[in-house]
View 1 (tube, helix red, strand yellow):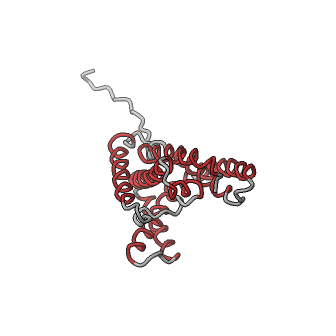
View 2 (view 1 turned 60 degrees about the vertical axis):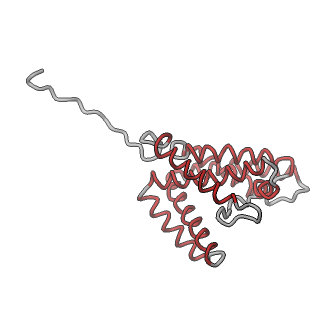
View 3 (view 1 turned 90 degrees about the vertical axis):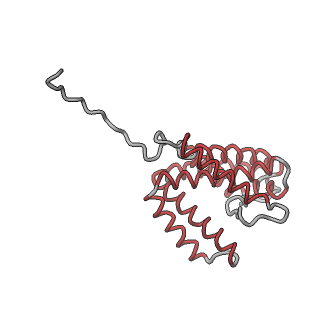
Length: 218
């Protein structure tokens, strides 16, 4: 949790990071990993301290953010599998919240493993989907916080955005699932056809041109 004075800057970081992830996640995958490592590490470290210890909380957030960014960058080569595992866990939560509440941890683990395996098989599409919809949700939470939504403001500061349920919104926020789907779909299309094409960072193959053999006509 961050002090009140830092909640709006945290929301702005969520919006900026969510935008990059949603529309440029495939091309800037390493940057996106660093941003989300910074956010997650900062929120995790700052949650150790109480609201009264502002200085210690801010220092912990900065150090934790730096550590989180380096950790995810170090995991760059398994980052695709991590994205797939995250998508699998999100899918399990979305399905079970529509049926019978929170899923059993074993179900989440199975979905995460399946997502990781699928991600290694279909790298490009999984990265695009994961970064587009993950960025869409992060951007929505940050934007709502900047507009003064108290629930979103607490999520931006306390880390509720980590385990969010975009398809099971709070009362009075029925627009959230539709906004999540719409922004995520737009981000997916933008990456598929423009920003995440063959020039994307992941899966880019270097081809070398072989010299053309001279024919008799030459």
